[in-house]
Structure formats: structure tokens, C-alpha cells
Figure (cartoon, rainbow, N blue to C red):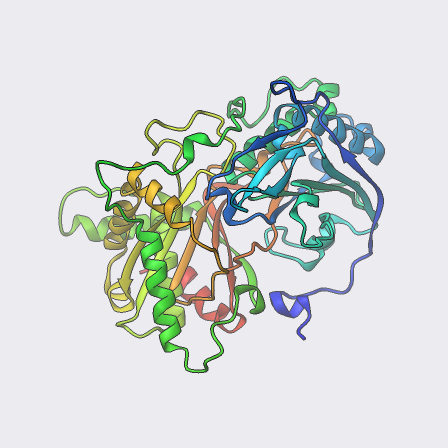
Amino acid sequence: MASSQQQHGNYVPPPLPAVCVTKSVSVYPKSLHQHHHNPQQVEVSLSNLDRQCPMLMYLVFFYKNNNFVADHQLFDDLDSVFTSLRSGLEETLSVWYPAAGRLIPNGDHGKLNLWCNNKGAILVEAVTRAKISDLGDLSQYNEFFEKLVYKPVFNGNLAEMPLVVAQATKFGCGGYSIGIGTSHSLFDGPATYEFLRAWSSNSAIKRKIKLTTTNDHHQLHKPVHERGGIKTKSSPNNKLARAAAIDHLYELIKHAMMIDRNGGGLPEMGSLNYVLKTYHLSGAMIESLKRKVFDDHHQRRGNFSCSSFELVAAHLWKARVKTFGLRKEAMVCLQFAVDIRNKMEPPLPKGFSGNAYVLASVALTAGELEEGTHEAIVEKIKEAKNSINNDYVNAYIQALEGPQGNLPPLKELTLVSDWTRMPFHKVDFLSCEAAYASPLASPIPQVAYFMQNPSDLRGIDVRIGLFPQTVAAFSHYFLTNQQ
């Protein structure tokens, strides 16, 4: 069996010093949530969007000691930092009370719901003699990052699995990492960002140093935990509404199964070897690509505009499909997450804390994608994004009613998730921005995550899982072959 280092395919430097756990505690809400007559027995009925992935998703925040804006003595004592994080989490769980609960199957239909039983989160303290500088480029995945998060032992019973776990690790250089895992059934990306910002704002360290300003001016909204606004509703005006992402995915899987000649079925995503790579597209590179696209357009007609996300998504799709050298007649698909908080009728309330995204989808043949201009692909992406409305969302959620299997590996499918509006590095647990906030491998490692780069706010960091044998070709097409 290949080692985990080989699975991710990243260069592994000489072994770093061990990470030693020194404390582990359960953290409970400071004040129990009061709900009718039974404050500890509140069941939140989840939507099908919430139930897709009950696994913990991990982020590791790195804070270098030379970035601390307050008295360094506050950070010299690990116990003080740990106590600050603990008190802040207790305060936060009082408002974000589902995060202290557990997932349970409903007795009537067996589907997962959220039981707000105040079982608590887990907070771990750890130390290492390693220095943050020993880790090199923090934007690149490093196997050592896996030691900076707490991974509960899972015995198959989700009712015993905490929904929020965290580990504060002090490095030999005086810096810290804070590794946090949150259940995807609890929060989507925007809700996770709001939860972490609330936690950091409740930190005792912030209160001690009396910070009156922050680099993140995004307003905190009171969370709304009720999921009723996103349940499937009948659509009398359009009973034949379809979700393109679901239809396209079924087509891709059907074609892949037809091509598979071995009779053993397609392997699951987790059984394959992936290299987790981060590509930094600087603001200058994105502007250069935009100019090329705009210049080509102006030679033909009128005005053309697009977002950085739309252009980079189109560029990545072309590069990834070209890397695989697929047949020109093969169907290829780009799917990307769209926040539906303002797409619903009526819109979801501000502060909605559940999963509120669906996948939009564009399908072409590999030949059409290769021959198409960036402008043409961007227009397809815009059309797919604009197609997301109440009927689409209802059709998407309804399609998730059936049994859900693991997604097989599909070279024809390119998946993108946009995190650029969630600058996680600005979550200032220790009075300063993180040097970097690094996601660990997700259950579907080939998803491309678009993230802000802390040192280049106009640029985009693209984290993607690739097959080892495709890294060189993809890097060439993505970074150097821009048209």
C-alpha cells in the first residue's frame, strides 16, 4: 500500500519534530440554549443539501509570532492562549448552539437531522519543537499539517461524533497553528466563515488587548439555524424544472460506466492517488489574461465584461481537459458552487447558517471546449450561473432524495468552489491575520478551491487535487498557455 506521502505526491523534507498533545477538553455553551420547555432536546430538521457530506472539513490557520500586534507576553503562555480560545468558543456556542450538538438519523425516515443536545465541541492543546519556517511555503499542502488537527476516532456512529473540533499547537518559534474541523452537515463555507469570525471576536485575547478595529470590516450577522426555508417545495408554475448539474452528472457516470471494460466498476475517489497543489495566479497574471480576452473581443464587437472567477474557471477548465487529452467528441462538464441565499423566493434570511449552495453546470464536448475562446466559455458560465433560480434549487434538492453514493473519479468532470469572498486568513484568533489558512484534503480532492492570497488580494490561489502523472502538463497549460 502506498504511504500517505506517496498518495499526495508532495515532496517530504526530513522528518520534523513530533507534535505532542498536552490537553484535551470538551467545550460546552456558556449558557444553554433555551427552546420552549426542553432546552437540551431541540431537533433541527436538515435539508438534503446538509445531508450530502456529514464529514469534518479541516482548515489550519498559521500565526507567526512576528505578526502579533499586542504584547508578546500574552502569547508566550500556551495555557493563556488555550484558555482564551476555550472561553471564546463557550461564548460562541451559546449563540451557534447547533455546533454543540450531534447528528442523528430520524426515526421515521432514517435521514440525518441535527440534535441540539449540548454535547459540546472538542478543543485540544499541543506543542512541537518545529518552527513554522520549517514548513516552507504554507500555501502548499504538507503532510505535517495532518498533525495539526484533531481527528476523532469514528466508530460508525455519527451520534457520537463532535461537529466542531479544534487544536491549538504552539511551535518552537513562538508561533501558533489553530486547526479546526467543522461538519459539512452543520455549515457550508460562508456559514463556517461567519462562525469562525464570531469565535475569534469572542476570544479573551481580543478583549484583553481591547482591539477597537479590525482589518475585516465584514459585519457579523446573528445566525439563523432553522433550515425550513430551504426544504423542497412544489413548483406549480414549472413542474418540469430540471437541475442541469444532476442531469449532466448522470450522463457522465453513464458514459464512464459504458467505457469501463473491466467489469469491476469505477474506483472510488478516495482510493486514488492525488497530489494536492496550490497555484498562485497573481493579480497581474489575471489582468493580463483579461486584456487578451478583451482585446480579442474588441476586434470583433462591442463590450465584454467578466469577473475574475468566471475567467479563471474557464481557463482552468480548458487547461484540465487539455491535460487529459480526452476524445474530441467526449462530453466534458464544469460544475461550480453557487450560493443560493439570494436565489430563493423569498431569499433566505441574513445569517442563515446551513448549507445554501447548489452546483451550476456547463456541458460541452472536449472539442468544443478546446476550440472555444475564453470569452465563449465565460458566457456559458454566466448562463449557467443565471439559470439558478427557485425552480432549479427545488429540482436539485428533490434529486437528492434518492440514495447517495460516492462520486467516482471522472476526468470529464471539473469541479470548482469559490472561496474568494471568504478570506479565512483574516480570522484573527490571535489579534492578527493568519499568515495562511490552509484547507486539508476534502472528500473529493480534485475540487479546485479558489482562495484569496494574503499578500496579493487581487490574485487567486487555486488549490486542486491532481493525478501525479498530470501535474507537469496541467501546470504548463494552466500557468503558461493562457490562450
